[in-house]
Length: 258
Image (cartoon, rainbow, N blue to C red; front, side, top):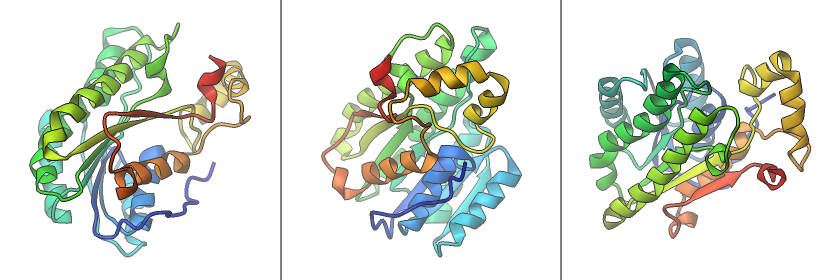
């Protein structure tokens, strides 16, 4: 599935955007959408090849592009990355916490993968970015949650619980940072398909789960990464200036069918 087709409904020229977990899938589409809208963009991830390819794609829009390898389960690495990103961009206006450890199984490893990457990476990146956001005239934090945060799951309880914690963190963080006029929101995607992503793999490895999930989406298809990216543009833009502390489901009506 092609995640390169974008349009930029907002002019975000002059914005400085950091996307933690920005080399593939939703994060890549977010980074490219912000760049197409005129923002300078920094991304981080672990995979060097995808990181470099995405950085080049960002730069092709004629904006400042920065990419750096970072293990988002490593607190020190996050601190170093955010400081380097701020130096490269000249500050930070928007922080996007998009990474996931995809901790689905009930083992300690599964729980810790989600806790360390989905939740604590967002906490740590926010903490590191806070001085730069306080200095911004249009500061904003966006977290990538999931519709799994809204409902119980027989399978993948670890993932759902961590995403629910991230959504709760969004509300508390929004309240705590309101005095600094820093808006904090989360996007909760439904099932999103992209090349070599979770749902593309499940189509081959777990075809029954794939078809069952597809049947629950009223629009009759999986979502596209760029459809999440467009919501990120809106939430970061002046058009969302009175929105904070919210987790917005973007799922093509998937939750309507349970």
